[in-house]
Length: 161
Image 1 (cartoon, rainbow, N blue to C red):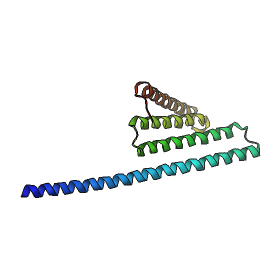
Image 2: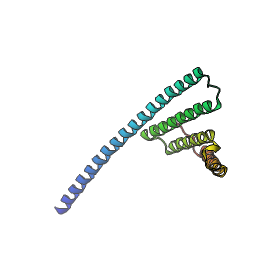
Image 3: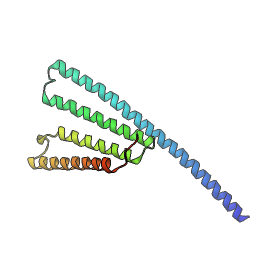
Image 4: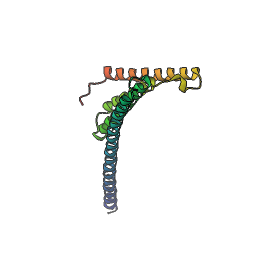
């Protein structure tokens, strides 16, 4: 009889664990969806802000100023990063292929590093040597991310979604 009691107790613990795991899974999924909604809202706000900046710069006659244009590009690239992060969160919630998620993360990294390269200013660093080190680091990171993306595309299975 002791064996039957142990088996029932073990099954009850297993059922409770399964229910708790399922409940936790639903909670995490809900939080992921909230995160996706936050990124979608940030993207929408960012697009409106970019349009306002462009209109204001046009009215003020600064639309041809290279620094203003670089600011627009910077904002646009930040918006692309937000979109890629949103896509990554959605891919997690849909339990997509891990390779698709990795590819999205690589895209996000490439966009972020290209953004850093575009807004790079030597004057923001303490010395020209520090600026050189930073630019070499950015270059290595960009080349590494691009190489990862090329390897993934060339040797990985084609993605369907």
